[in-house]
Length: 434
Ligand code: GAL
Image (tube, rainbow, N blue to C red; front, side, top):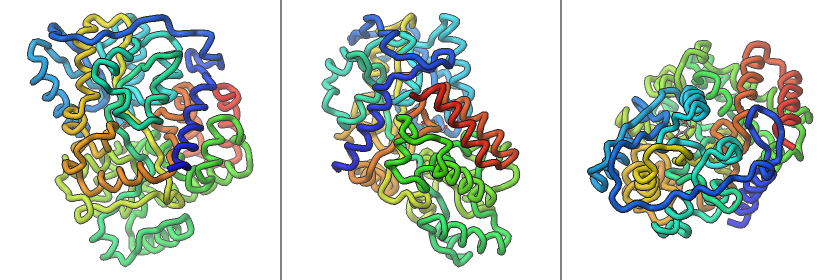
């Protein structure tokens, strides 16, 4: 528990450092202090409400359940569920940026707790402070004490958390591993031995999708190779990206992805998960929205239909991200937006959303009897493990860093040059981190 607090404190201090995205340069956030715009609670909202996210298609059922809770409570609001498909928001974030800069914001939009929210939209003074909603709904003590700081800056709370996801999970089908005579690997040596065995049987050891999924697998390797302390040091500038330890991360990552499918670039995360489900591949490393997909869309049972373990070398560590909804300044219907974020933070809303999503509730008082065996185990991990933030999902680094990291990844996927990738990352660190 103590270790958990220390690790999260590091994430929070990364936020406090205040490096800014905004056009890509390094700036102290304090120079762009947020001006007063507090969102007030509303009793009986009406009119149009547009909520914006990337939870489309297979990612939609959890959000639809949350919307049902909202609509039952606020029948006079006409909710428009605007989605832009694409895992991890790769497409949605670009559309959002155009709309925000063009003065056409939705009433509320999805953003990750941490640098994605704070280092992008809060420092640019584009968000409303939700503190009055937290107060009115008595939410200040309903979330883990380390979560609110990831949504806070300059005395305001800038988004409402709806879930907590874990990104360092390795998925498999127990029956298939048994059939192929392999055990679940716990470290990189075991992983490589298992991959070699699978390959000799004509099985793809690890399925992977498009670039952002490679980014996520990179953060899993970085955590497994470096351990939580050094991993955290990457995000506060204490460990250089051109350090031999980080070159080793890229080398290990290169080895890991040598076991993946050749068509990764053209696959969505769901298609990569499908390869495991249909027995083409043995493992997939993905955040636990994959559990939501396997349970809700594919109707597989956690534990029997699919199994899970931490990615190699990350036992006892929970690589964390949280989805939240924020309300931009200039939205047309702040009353309805206030009702929406209140619903996102409500127990009823979270218990409708999270069991379908594969995430655990952000609230500490949710009804865990409604959750799967997987989510119960993730909740236990979250309570007991060391927590570190996700790179691929906006927690530890600004959007500027993350976007440019994808370019480094594309280069590495082509040339597999670990030394060059490390040097390129250090250039990003010089630009975006202290
Ligand atoms: C993450 C998001 C998850 C899930 C995933 C795949 O960034 O936090 O909720 O949507 O992308 O798209």
